[in-house]
Image 1 (cartoon, helix red, strand yellow):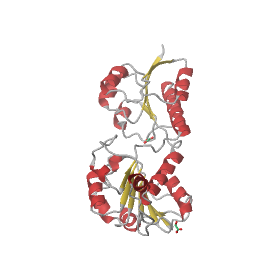
Image 2: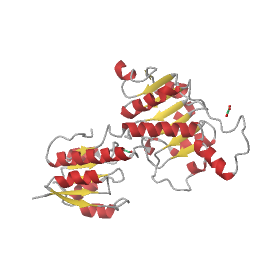
Image 3: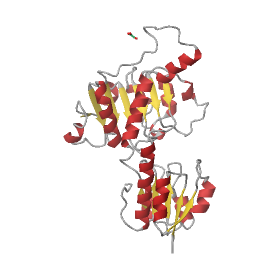
Image 4: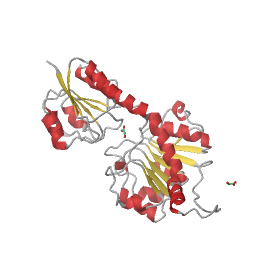
Length: 326
Ligand code: GLV
Ligand code: GLV
């Protein structure tokens, strides 16, 4: 009896080869650039043993009930798993796999690129070249806040937060502050130079020139970057988010950017995704928005896809997953 598996999108071929190499899988492949419609997904999950999904699929009690009690594993090709209800999978003893580690470098690099693009106004400036706004070299034109000598605040000092700080260090950042549920061991703080300092959120907001969000989206972090938080930042502060759009209250961010409460923002993630082209945030010149491309390096996407395939096969075999969500 073969085990039924659904892959919900076209993913790097290496992952499909891994799944096919397991002779025991009967593969249903939604080989499309676009997300599987919800009703189609619900039809196809019935009777599944293993589900390979992306962050675009909501894995909730409705879907798990429709799948049935034989479902053993849900494997997402993403590090974030806020789209999967862990209480519901736990209730049904379903293993959940994700892809930590393999996208740390790519996401940290994109974070730095977005920070630089926001701080040095690259998108706005390049636009001026095209639209005739480049009159002459002007001393006060297209200036942004200074990175060298600045204080950088990292909210969520995990794999990606640390890698961001490491990449920013060579620019001559003078202080790294971080907030995290727990203070990290000195050995971890010293992965960054100068050594990262654990502070409370108010101190981080008050003292940072750049604030970068690297927390998972949970009940505790949903909407945490709100009016109150932006009001505590410097008026010269730059806010960067490459984690999940849901950690930001976007109405409050819009107000903070519009009123000059903070200087600028760079977002790789929004609510919803895609952001409608008439969204107020897109009308602001001091907000750079990217289409959730943090991990978009070819080899990174392949590594995510193959790790998710290995998680899937381990779950089908009843083995512990190479990378289990918890
Ligand atoms: C991307 O956002 C991921 O969670 O992998
Ligand atoms: C800028 O181009 C300068 O020469 O200062």
